[in-house]
Length: 251
Ligand code: NAP
Image (tube, rainbow, N blue to C red; front, side):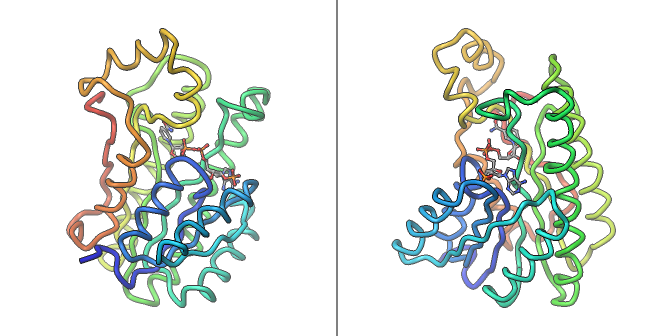
């Protein structure tokens, strides 16, 4: 039986990578999903077509999670589309490593991580919690990083860890605030083979990372989606305030 049958879900930043995988996985398990995107409209619409073409239910909604008014719009649109939001996944994250993101100044990178990853997560949670409280139930999953607490050398990791450790502190406090009706957990991917890793597959950097990972491979977006699926499902009904590391045993 599908594990998310009749569930309604919003996934922020679902137009690529891990978010896309969570959206397609949740839809395959019977959920009606909102594929949120900011810039990648065509990609989001393609994911929606793929889900709907396969017999699932999905709709794309544009919103910049760094903007509180966009977050309110996303919640309103999601409610009018889905009727209720049972599960909310805060996956949207600033890309500071590839494409235009890699060309930003350090101050701009830091600002976008704080605005999108940290404040975006907080604003989405603060927006959706009253809706879930009124319904008497809800599940929130927030995206962090397995090395946010343990640390990793370099300027980009320092900034990424600062934002993602903030997400951990916020989420664990929220979990204590909104229990017992709402569960809040964190998924902490390690080295996942998304764009940044794919661009480096032939390099010594990539091999060095693999040598440190006990399971000897980069993770796939699907590995992270599988963990999110478990936390979203009723099978995890006694789990809240936890960090689920998906990292091949690295930390
Ligand atoms: P990705 O491929 O770069 O995708 C990022 C997603 O976030 C895109 O769908 C993008 O949408 C969306 N996004 C960016 N800014 C947004 C905004 N202001 N409002 C709404 N959506 C926005 O990232 P990923 O590698 O799959 O990572 C997904 C999450 O996992 C992120 O939170 C990331 O920090 C975390 N994570 C990833 C790894 C890894 O190894 N990949 C490791 C640890 C943690 P548009 O393109 O439509 O703007």
